[in-house]
Length: 304
Ligand code: SAM
Image (tube, rainbow, N blue to C red; front, side, top):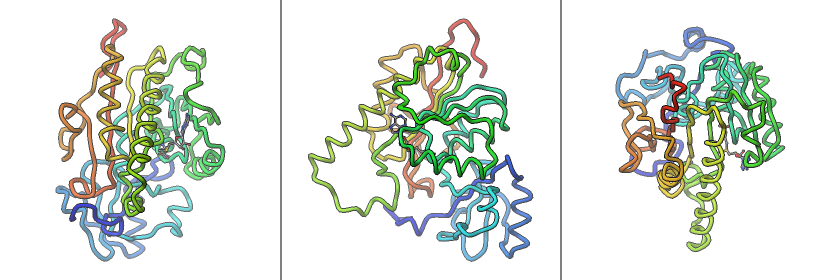
C-alpha cells in the first residue's frame, strides 16, 4: 500500500470473541455463508485479499482478515457478540498484557470497551476487571457492548482515572493495567484528511495530550502490586508515544520496557525498539503504538 492509503484499502479485521464462540466455529459459519477460508496467513501480503476470501492473522490468534470494505455491521455474528469489529493493531494491547484468569486488572481509559472485552476474553471472565472512563455517554455505549460480548467480570466506573486512589484497598491486588488514553488519533486513516489545523494550535494540542498521557502513566505506576502495564495510542506522533514512555521511565527507575513480539515488522523509534508501531504501509493496519512496562524485580518475584 502506498503511504497514507485510505481506510478503504486496508484489510477488514474481525476479532473472534472467545467468551461466546471459537475461531473454528466462526470460520465454519462463514464458510457455510459463502466466504472462502484460505487458512492462516504466513506473510503480511497474505492479508491482501479479494472477493470473499479470508484468512486467520499471522500475529494474533483470534483475528480474521477480510478484503477491504467487507461490512459486518448487520451480520448475525456481530449482533450476537461472536465477533468484534476491531482493527488488528488495536488487538495488540490486551493480547500483549495477557492477564491470567483470576487476576485483578485495570482498564484506565476504557470506553467504548473493545479492549476491555478482549481482556475479559483472555481472563475467561475470571478475576476482576476495573474499567474507568470520564465520559458517561461513552460508558453507556460500553455497557451495551460488554453485555453483547458476554463480559461479566467487569466493574465500570464513571471516573477520572487520575483521581482513582492507588492505595484504595479494593485495588490492592491489581497486577495488570491497560492504559489507552485519549490521543490525537493521528493514526486513524479516516481522520487524516481533516483540513490541517493552525500549526500553533496543533502544537499546543499535542503538548497538552502528551502531558495528560504522562500523568496517566505515572499515576498507573503507583498501584502498589503492579507487575505489568501496557500503554497504547492510535497516534503516529513520537511526542505522544516514545517521548511519553521515555519521560516516564526516567521518572520511574523501578520500571523497564519489555521487548515485544520479535516477529512484528515495525518497531518503536530508536532507542525504544522494544515497543511496537503499526502503520498502513508496514503492518496493513491503522497507525498505532504499544509499549509494555514491567516492575523491576522487587524481591517478591516477578513471573515471566
Ligand atoms: N480503550 C478504548 C477501547 O479500546 O475501546 C478506547 C479509549 S479512548 C482512546 C480514550 C478514552 O479515555 C475516552 O473514552 C475518554 O473519554 C477517556 N478519558 C479521557 N480522559 C480520561 C480520564 N482522565 N480518566 C478516565 N478516562 C478518560
